[in-house]
Length: 426
Image (cartoon, rainbow, N blue to C red):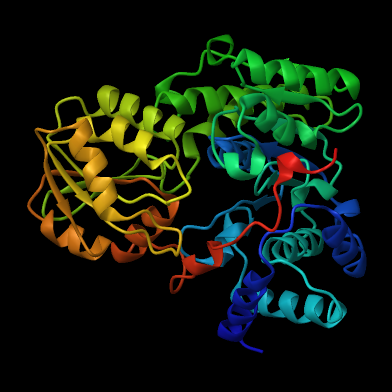
C-alpha cells in the first residue's frame, strides 16, 4: 500500500458515516494494544474556539519542553493535519503503516473514518512517546470517539447553536452532549457564560465530583500584544488555555515565560488569517461556520480593519444556519460573491445571494460557480474576506499555494450521521 492507496481506503470508510457511540472505538483501541492507557490528555470540547484553544495549549506545553501530540478535525487541506507531534504533520509513510496495521487487525468489523483516525492518532502518539496529547472532540463529546480516554483535565470552550440536528435544539441539550467528556474527579475548565448551558455543565460536574473552573478573560489580563492570533475572541481562548495550565501546575510545571512564549508563537491557519499578496490585495481567511462565529468575525473586522473597503466571498454548508450567517456578514461588505463549498452539503449560492441581498440591498452581489472564479473576479479588490466554512477556507489555502502539505484531501471531511445523539437513551 502507498499513500494514495491509504487515503483511498480512508475515503472508503465514509460509507459507514458517523457512528455516535464508543463501543467501536474501544474495540479498535483494544486491538491496537490500548495506546490511550500510555498517554496523558487534555480533552477539549465546545462549539467554537476548540481548535484555537488546542493550538494555544499545544504551543504552551511545547514551549515548556514537552513532546506534544495534537489531534484536531476537520483538516483544512491534508488529512495529515489531524495528527501532529510538536506541530509536525504525521509523515505519509506513517499514515500508510498505521492504516495497514489497523486494517489487518480489524478486517471483520465496519469502522467509521473518525473512529479509525482516532485510534490511528492514539497509536502514533504512544509510539512517539508524547508527554502530553491535546485531544479535540469531533462532534459533541458524550458519544464522540475521542471520549474513550481518561484525561488529566477537560476543557469546554463555550456552548452555542451548531449541529442542532444531532446535538439537540436547545443550549441545554447541546451542553449536555459537550459535558459528556467530564469524568469522575477530573478537573474541568470552561469559558461558557450562557446561564442555561452553564447550569447543565455545573450539574454534571457536581454529579461527577469534578472540580469546575469558569473563566473570563479579564481574570487573566490577556493582551493583544501577547497573542499571535487576531481577534478579541482569542483573548478568551487564551485565558481558557492559561487557566487550564494553572489547574495542572501540580502535575506539569509551566513558567510564566513559557506561557508567554507559547501564546506569542501559536499558529492556527484559517482563523482570521491575513494573506498579503504581491499585487497588494489582502485576503482574510476565516472559517466562521455558524452564527456565533459570524458574530465574532463581525467584531474582529470592526476592531482590526475598520477602514477597509471590504469584499466578501461567502460559501456555507446547507446544514448550517446560513440565513443568519448571511444576515450578520452581508452588511459588512460593499461587494459580495457567493460560491458553492466543495461538498455535497453545500448551500445553494443563489439562495445565499438572495439572503445577502435582503440583508444588504445596497451591495453589489454576484453568484459564482466556484471559489476560483470569485478569486479571479476580485483580483483588483483591495481587501477580500473568504468565509462561511472551514471547507471553503481549506480550498482557498490550497488555491493560494499556502497548503501545509500535499494535494487536497478535503473530501475526507465529509460524513453522514447515522443517529441523533440527543434523542438516544441516556
